[in-house]
Length: 334
Ligand code: ATP
Ligand code: LTN
Image 1: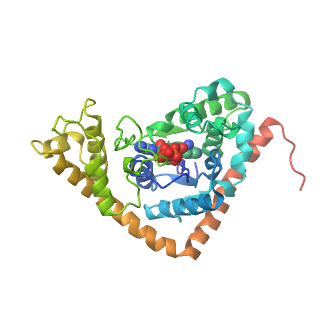
Image 2 (image 1 turned 120 degrees about the vertical axis):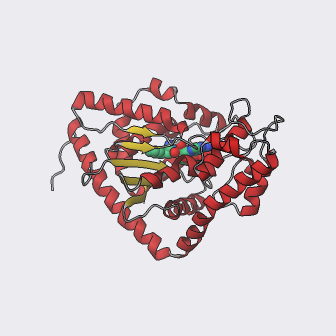
Image 3 (image 1 turned 60 degrees about the vertical axis):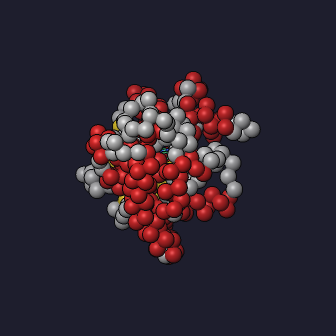
């Protein structure tokens, strides 16, 4: 608890341009939860280097991501929006938690398996212990709730296991976090292969709607989206392409899948895809406009970066000191 409010932590990697999947699955929920909780939203750049990055490009993307958090509606006066690399406590706690995590647990992580298959030439130890750093992010702020998409559930479970293991030895040190998965949009699929998650690192640009795509591009990508030959708009696993488009439409408009089925009863895929495209454009346009304005205000973004890193650092230190004491590190002499 901070000032009587429960704590929320979440983060995203600046590994590419955000997709509508990241927005509907995570960022949109962050905004809706931001009044209720004391929130920490991090640009997790330490995680990003588990995959080789171009330094200038990483810096540019990280700043764009931080700006996008604000453009999406998070008020940096009320929400702590900061770079993970500006708070050394993340790496320090991750080291300690590494010593409370088993190789066997990490071996089971599906994201590790997927990413090592994708980057077979660089299966580094950071990629393997990635979930421990994520656990450190969350536990450092004693977070009660962590809003993420479904793909991160396994990492949330290991975070809880590590926290419970630590608490069983040292007493009540960490709050055990709960995942928060949104009802709609928790897993948006690729527009080109609805069996695959929409991902910002997909090589095929037609597979994803990027947050910064212009209206024409958005409309064109939805028109090209892979569907089926059933020719009816139904929310069923047998029609994964259409189901995914219904999910996107529902998340953008707030309508339930049954309502969407009714709305497009007897209509063709062409009409439906146009409606999905228009709904996405109207959700993304205000975010894009705000982003363009914010990007110009360098001094403002710099002040957010500075002030929030200090705030995050303060809370991080509190937990870190407690943990260091518990494991037996000597007190600093001041
Ligand atoms: P990468 O391709 O680099 O692995 P990603 O697109 O999978 O990236 P992350 O940075 O791993 O995105 O995720 C940021 C947040 O967005 C997480 O909370 C994640 O659960 C959520 N998310 C990612 N992809 C989707 C998706 N397709 N549908 C819903 N939520 C998603
Ligand atoms: N692993 C997450 C990003 C992430 C995160 C976190 C999410 C890093 N640390 C802490 C929630 C809480 C991802 O790839 N989406």
